[in-house]
Image (cartoon, rainbow, N blue to C red):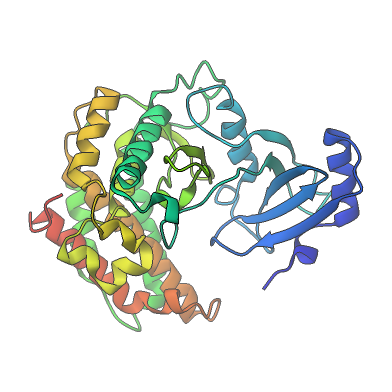
Amino acid sequence: MATESDLVNHENLRSFLAEHLGETEDFDVQRHDQGFSNETLFVTWGDTELVIRRPPIGETADTAHDVLREYEVADALQDTDVPVPKTVAATEDSEIIGVPFYVMERLDGDVLRYSEPDRFENPEARAGIGTEMIDTLASIHSVEYESLGLGDFGNPDGFTERQVERWQGQFEWAFEETTASREVPEIAEIGDWLADNVPDEPAHTLVHGDYKLDNVIFGPDADPELAGVLDWEMSTLGDPLTDLGWFLFFWLDPVEGDRSPLMQTMAPTFLTGDDYHSREALVDRYEQQTGVEVENLKFYRVLAVYKMAALGEMFYARYLMGNSDSTFYAMMEDGVPQLAKHALEIIDGERPI
């Protein structure tokens, strides 16, 4: 496992931060060990708590770990209704710590990944979490991205169709390794259904690309307030309902399928408890906040499961290649067939929202 010493040149970083924030004697760097993508470092700089985002060690794809893209969108959103951490600086100069990186201020609060904080263990707070999540998603989809300088941030025309093609391609890559272990013939059926049912895209918006509960931070007050949206590396311009479908996949309902061992490894299990919004209520709230009637929701829900299954198949391929000993990657041997079954049940109407 990489350590903070592997990930950063401390003296070069000290000089960079001093240039932007002034000198300090109190300087410390710690690696944050959550997440599977870009590396996160927590930095103490005097009285200021900072976060550094940098690519992981080793060779990375040109776009998959583009931290400067994260910085671009977060910096553009500073004075909007979308809550984001305060940006400090970014650089593509790899001479400083070996890779491009950016710096932002650290937010105070909690990421609701495995459990709800004690202060939220009441009906009003639990309802407030869902409301904050949907209202913030609506804010993301409502920003005037061109006026923020993000008019060239993506290629929105044909976005949804390209999403289907992209994840089909990811399956094809993974299957070259995994089919010798087991096959998942249902994936082809799901891919064909998606290709045949791509809806007309709504008006293009800024899209987060990975909007879910563990990619936001709630402030420390008793009443839930979403203090910041994190992890913008997949953001682009495109179809906002792909964000909604992805978010709904990770928002568990108190129904039998959501209580499966697989789903409970991928999403916060406390959402199946009392007082949380149902997925149907969240869609209603989204329509109210955006003025957009959500049509073809089945397509976007299936696309989300298909995307997660493709990620799972790539995880499993890397496990078989010996590139990871993650137990989560290993469980995708059975997990991806379960996700394929999940998607077919949505298509067949056996999994109403």
